[in-house]
Image (tube, rainbow, N blue to C red; front, side):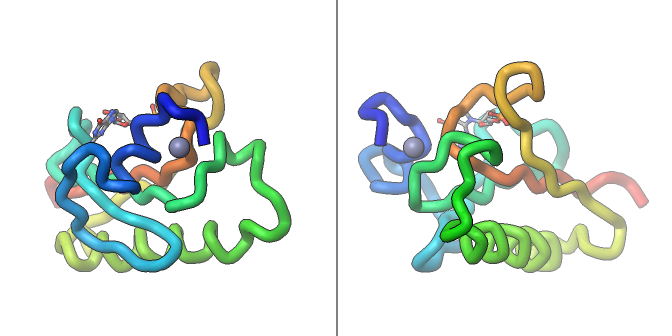
Length: 110
Ligand code: 5GP
Ligand code: ZN
């Protein structure tokens, strides 16, 4: 892990953060600069730079992330009104934190 990775520090509790959900594979917390009424980040415990850097052995992590996104959308009651789950990939794709994360945004008006 790069020593300056902010999400590694959050995952490892070096920076205090309220986890909305956690399991062996990932943690979920609120985005510090929300772009919608609900804006959560689903972050694997393993440091992976981006989607480009996934290995075959990471398939279960991605699966966990997507199912957790679905579950958190339901928990935050944005499942029926609708939501977005997305990855930004590298600088041109809008990625600013180079530790893989899935955005969940929702809570839009119905
Ligand atoms: P990216 O642009 O890399 O896909 O998304 C990074 C996201 O992480 C941004 O939406 C940004 O607001 C959020 N973020 C950056 N630093 C922190 C932090 O220290 N804590 C939290 N909770 N979110 C952060
Ligand atoms: Zn990291």
